[in-house]
Image (cartoon, rainbow, N blue to C red):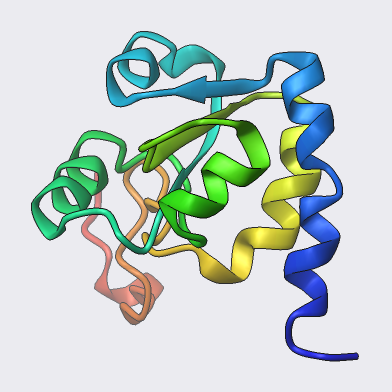
Length: 129
C-alpha cells in the first residue's frame, strides 16, 4: 500500500460530511459550538500566530494538521478556509480515526492524575490522613 493511500481513503468520506452538515467552518463558529465539536482540522498553510491561537483556544480538543487551503476548497467548496471543525458523530469518529496520525496536540491528562512518566508513590511514602 502506498503512503498516499490512507489520505485518499479518508477523502471518500468528505461528501458525506457536507450532506450531514457535520462541518463547522470558522473559528467563531467553533467557539460557539464547543459542545458539538469532535475535532478540528487546520491546514499546513495556516499562519504561525493563528496556529498558536487555535492550539491555545481549543486545547481540550484533538487538533489535526493536514491538507492545504486549496484542498479544503476542492473537498468542501470553502474558498480561503484554513480551520474547520467536525461535529460529534460516527462519521467524525471515522474521519478522525484515519487522520489521528496527523494530530499536533497531545491529550490532556484527566483530573488530578500525575503527569505521564511520574513514578508512582509507594504506600510507605503516602501521608496518613
